[in-house]
Image (cartoon, rainbow, N blue to C red; front, side, top):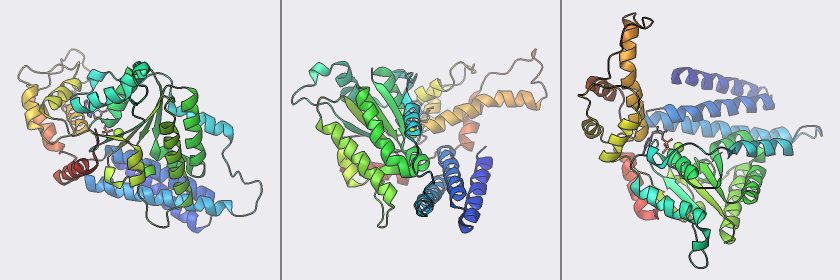
Length: 379
Ligand SMILES: Nc1ncnc2c1ncn2[C@@H]1O[C@H](COP(=O)(O)OP(=O)(O)O)[C@@H](O)[C@H]1O
Ligand SMILES: [Mg+2]
């Protein structure tokens, strides 16, 4: 699948470049944005860190060029150019980010992460459930950031928090704000926080917060700078009004790229690390649920063998392993014969999958998280 997506991204990018040269800006913008969107999806699927970095850089590049073009395209005096997205569209976008139904992730679906869970319980769930206890000097937290290597449960735990507490849940992808809303993203952020205020208590989850909050080089684009400022103002507004029951929860895989001004606004910074032995065992169980396995499959042993793997890596290993019996059946031409039983998943299926799928987080990267945590962590 990712091969096809890569091809798709490359096609969009090529088209964008051509249109850009031909000064067909509007079409070029659409193609740059499409290329960036596909790349962002790929980042989530890619195993190799180098490739992820490459996609990330490319996506950034396309977004930056699209932003530039958007400003250029606006300049001509043609009055009827649809400069702004209509109010209705913005409202619709905000509606989309509000998760009406609670995400259905139970606390127990998140393996391990004991420290992160208790920090979030204290910071978000208790104040939401018992606001009367959080008065005067006992102030609830307003800005919390989850950080750690990719695929270790940041998004998952945020959903579990939302399931657990009785607040309106706004699930915002910072990357989407930037990529889909370029010129209007500032307005979108402002209205998002207005909506959060109307529907208090609210939990605003900003995933991939680094897309907005990173330190940028000189020459940073205007539209990007404005949305950054807007988000900071919104967060200050939330913090300054003690009676407002809004919590901003951010998540990032690259905390060291978050600039100091934002870092300060996330008063609590919680490390979501690679799963430990016990957590890995639980993740194996969660991701093989309902599929029969041979008695020799020992989850504790699998957990020991999978040191260094992220939760997402283990989920992938499980998916691969439990497919193997089906694949064999298919290879034997017996898939459609319902009288043939599928064999149980064996230990060898898991070890084979582990050979194919290598840990996606490098030890160098982990060291960087530890260093950042030592310097800036605050849980
Ligand atoms: N602690 C965990 N417990 C259970 N599943 C996990 C855990 N960590 C990761 N996973 C699996 O990996 C997937 C990706 O995790 P996610 O929360 O999106 O990672 P990220 O930290 O990058 O936001 C999850 O949907 C889940 O299937
Ligand atoms: Mg995530």
